[in-house]
Image (tube, rainbow, N blue to C red):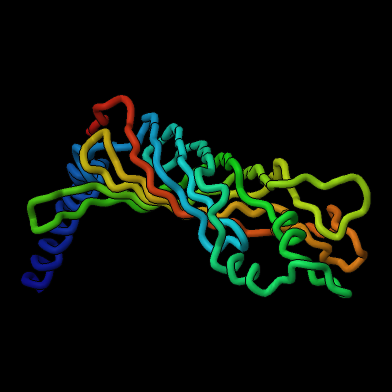
Length: 261
């Protein structure tokens, strides 16, 4: 009986003394509890302006390719969010696609007794990209660093963007007065701009920028009567995809990137 009482007393004392020690241990915070995931991280985008220029080419156009000189201006609100504007000027207004060349080989020189256009009528109705302007909000969820042969180290990021897009369409001829079966669609068309891009940083202030975008606008690239009413009007417009791939050389300002704590 004495031994059992002594054991019980010892157990109670041990629990009584140990409980405060366990509670104190639980209240203690790890020295890394509030520490950032990466210390001394170079913030390559945060609160920095981006200025760039480059070349962009259309992909899959119906009748005329467009190779454009482009400019880019952006501001990175945070390291993962940015606002940017892009503009492009077509340098190749007469760059016909292979489809157009094949089409000209089969179209007649003189009118037929059907809706088949002549070569001249078809060319008169076709439009091409003149200038492009786009605004975009960029979300940058993926960033990282890689090395080549363990000697060359470079930072990169991937981003998605969206916003308004504008295309100014041009043509060689304008529609004469009266009802026409072919009428080139020209002028400014407003639509949606969206796509993906990436930066490849060679140092803190210079990067290669790649973008793939689609500007979706209402257009009639052939300028032909599409609804069968005998005349080409705005009723013949439909949503038209304009895919572009571009490469820019961009500079970030200030030239020195901030470093996290």
